[in-house]
Image 1 (tube, rainbow over the protein chains, first blue to last red):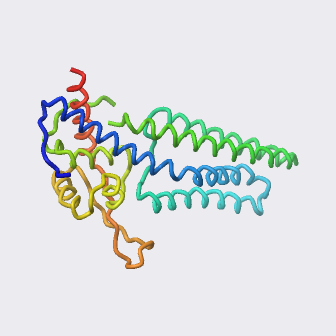
Image 2: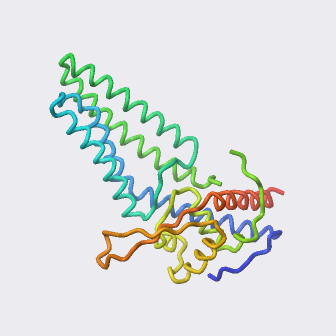
Length: 155
Length: 100
């Protein structure tokens, strides 16, 4: 298709252009959604490692924390490599709300697991870590679905 | 942030607008990914990209790519602040035209 100019006052031209823009953004959304199947569980693993880190104590806890951040960084690197996209901010308010809620939730879970680890409630920390992992994976799926929807309204 | 409704003739050509609009929601994208999403060849798209860079609406940064066997550099395209403002205003203008 040639990059021809279009009539600024033409209703049909404007509609066609906006339709094409929507189609392009839908393809960007598809690229993002195609990575959810591995990105969501991987980030769930990252969250679970972080929440479980107090179990390692002062001696080994840092290994779990480093492992957690390594997972998150690896997800970002792999996502960029597979899609060719650099995405670091949500497409709309709903996505932003999920990110904030998830961040606060993980931070709270980390605090609670630290307290539980200090009083020796190991099983509770393990359960909380698993729960945090599953919830995080679910939130990532929801975020990606919302991202695709909110992409249409950007700009 | 409110959007200034402004028809921008320099990005009204379909391919220019599509490149800008596709890059608007992301920090950046590889040149090849943009070409693939728009269904255009890289050779075909390079002239449009160069024009948008000249206009100050797009930045093109070269990055080394370990993933490529020939160690060629990949090009990352991203909208500049002026580009974001232009595409937001132009899309708002097109929507306003349809709402009339």
